[in-house]
Image 1 (cartoon, rainbow, N blue to C red):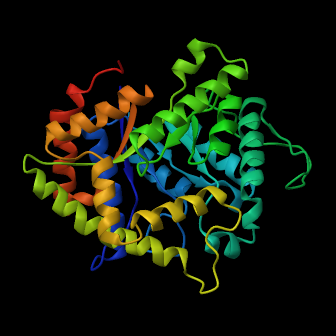
Image 2: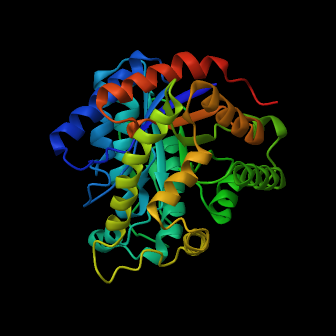
Length: 357
């Protein structure tokens, strides 16, 4: 069983950028002190929804402040930067941390990012798959090669060489298409915190079926290091845990909506059929209303007493077989309250979680 801590670096109303960045660093250090396995970071641009635009720089800082903590990206928005630059950054962090960096990636969701960085949003899936393949192949061979479909440059040796024989990587998977692509390659996926237990189970069943058809053994499939993300608040007073999360998530959801519409003519889901369908479902279920969406997320995530948190997480572990659990604690309020909830999780919840039935 592994437990990670994910930090969104969101700027709540009334807080300065300095306060958010200071907390971002201190939560990383606290994660090592509390024996979390990994501290995960997220990439966002041009919005208070997340202040960490360059995750390689952010992770370098955290890796330098810790000695045993793994630090990862969940993830790098792969299509918006040149693969050679990203591979250099990846290899430097792998070497300088002695293998404590996890290269997690996403295709990106925000039209503003693609527009500013000059990438066609509709091409993001093909670019992501292409860049990820060439970068990971390059870490093994030392040479970055492109077939010219999405970018052209001559073969080039990239330095330094990898510290690890196999650099850990993962990709956030929300659609059946991404799940299938990862399964065909035997790569780990990150499951969303906003889907139900039955949806997570179905996603794992799809992955495992495709992986088998692609020739992977049952033993290999069993050991793929998938991660499951959850929002977490642990308190003996369950109502207190729910209330503090409710205030944070309400502001956070509003910030998300604003981030997606930074340009008045933005079409947030160009080329994203899965997200269009998900949004339609949210509309039909009333989840576009912030209060109802927070209520919905509370039903899915470990928010409440230690006993309730154990029950919810164990339910997902048994349904999916995933034992790499990544939790977001920022919704707990002040920095002191966040760290207190992290401590309660590691002492009153984590020791009582069991391997899947």
